[in-house]
Each structure stands twice: as C-alpha cells, then as structure tokens.
Length: 434
Image (cartoon, rainbow, N blue to C red; front, top):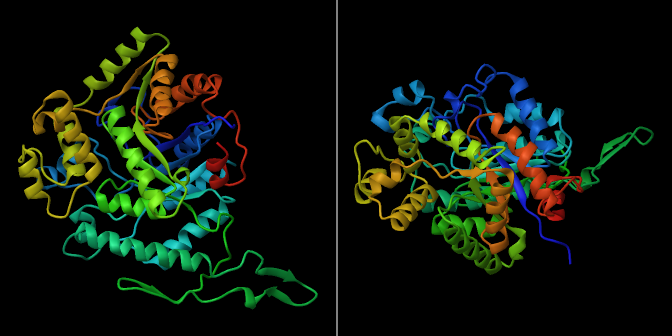
C-alpha cells in the first residue's frame, strides 16, 4: 500500500503582509521588491525547490476600509493589501519553474464566466498544466462598490451564482476536443472545426454561448481550491473543490471539519480522497527550541494592537473597534464576513474561556520549535486524520519559506511524509501522486 503523503500549498499576497500583521516590520522582511518581478521569481524557485504542490495568491479588489470606517490604518500599518493583479504575476513565476502549481483568487460574484475561463485556460496553457483557481464568492461591500454594486449580495445568492459560473466555465473549457489542432500545412487545415462546439450555457444568473477562442488546456480545467466554511460553502466545496483551505483553531476542530467535508464529498458521488483538506499554519523554526521561542517572541512583539484589530475587522466584516461581542458583530456584518475566520474566533473563545473581543484580538497561533518539533506537530495532525496537508502562510517574507524549505521539509521527507521529487506532469497529477 502506498504511504499517504502530505500536500503543501503556500499562501501568498502581492503586498507586505499575509495574516501576520507585524511580519513586514521585521528587519529581515523584504519590502523593496514588492512591485518587482524578481520577488515573485525568487519565491517561486524557493517553493519549487522545497517540492511544494502549489502556491496561490489571496486577493482583494480594493483597499480594506472597515476598521474606523476608512482605509487610513490599513495603509499606515501595512494591512493585507493586494497591490498587483495575481494574473499578471503568475506567468512570471511560471517562467522560472517547471512543476509548482500556480493559483489565482478570482471571484464568481464579480466576473463573467467567459473572462474567468479564458484567463485560467490561458494560464494553464502557458504553464503546461499548472493552473489553480481559488474560487471565492467575495465577502466585502467595498469590492461590490468598486464593481458598481450597492453592496455584496446575500451568501446563499452568491453561492447559487457561483454554481452557475462553475457550470458555465466547465462548459466553455469543454468546447474544444484535445486533438482539435491539426496544423496540416499540406492539407491546408489548421484546426478541425468538427472538434470545436458552442457551450450554449444558460442559467438564472449567467449565460454564455462560447466557444472559447483558445484550445483545451493540459488539465482540461484548473485545479479548484475553495475556502468556504459556511454550510452553503461546504456544500459548494463538496461539489467542486479539489483542495479546501480552512483555519480551525485546534486539531479536534480540524478533525470535525475534515470529516464533514469528506461526508459531503461522498454525498456528491465523488471519492472523499478527491478533495484534500488543508488547514492554514505559520511556523517559526529555529536551530534550537530556545532560539525558536526567542524568534517567535520578537515576531509577536512587532504586532501593534490596532493592526491586529484591523486585520480581524476585515476578515469578520465588522469594525471590531466599535463592536465587541459576537451579537454586535453579527448585527453589523450585513452580508459581509468570512465564516471560517468567525468560526476560529468562536472556537478560541470556547477552548480558553475568553470573551469575543479577547479572542478576536488574539493573533493566530504559530507553530514554534525546531524542525523536528514542527514536523512532530504537522505529523500529529496528519496522522490523526485532521488534514491532508497544510496551507503555509508567511510571517517574515520570504525568510519563513526559505527556513521552512531548508529545515522542515527535509525532516518531513526523512519521515516519508512528503515527496522528495515531483512525479507528475501537471498540478492535478502531482496532487494525485502524492
């Protein structure tokens, strides 16, 4: 029997921070190259050398402005801002790698399926079958207003539209047969038109005729990543997702989440192992446990309280400087907020007996220790069945990923828990092979 192995995906931003609001202030954090292609080429090489399955860019179509009712603090304190469009960055990364999966966050609420299908198929073609799509329905009024809407629609409506967008994209991706390109100079036939057809998709929310103006991509469709934690979001993941990103507070919470997703996947007639569940982690690794603890303490000291509050305000969809209880936050959210982030706060409240405000002010947990310590904790989650691997988000960029690849990955490989080389041609093949 083939030994089960972990999957590793890197969480990235085209900006200064990614879930750790103080990391950009660290003297080893690279800031000079945020808008330069060299930054993204470097991290792509680092991740591929460490045999990561993939990376994806979290994205937001605008500047967060929930905390304080404006964007001042987010700009001043280096909030989670997405500067560059990930679809312009990923081909740059693809040029310097051969195996690393490359994912973009794209919203089904704001984009038409033809644009989505064309962009993602183009990326998959250019990278030889390594494209991934982090499918989101979006969760902020600011994005809706930037796209000409009064506010974000209700969650159920967003997911109903998302199902149709995925159906339409799937129809468009299947408009071309794999062997439609003939390119026969003698016969004067470039493409066999009998192997290209219209999509003719029509739903309640979207419609598209097709076909796409480009051939079938190596994977047929990109690998689908999804992070919805609500009941409706989990149903959506069960139907479509191949990777699910989650943020449980504890191993027990992870076990419950994975069991629920696998049951829903089976209910959709899919094999449970077709959908991998990856909780998010950030690590601080040191040559000794004492060094790691010292590094973690210094890193956490760089978090200003307001920076932490504004981060969670953006995730929860309510100004936590004004709303201090779960009930007040729920009343202020409207249709905004990420269910997984709220679940993590509530899980922390229950486990440690904190108030909602205290739990919301708490930074995310870090895995801290030597490479062996970190591997022990990852192995414990993995062996218990709480996950199929991890989404690793940075603290100090790019140093954390460099340290992780230099120290933690070899320890996981030594234990037989992680690949030592890529075996597949496409991202989907590598996910299946591991």
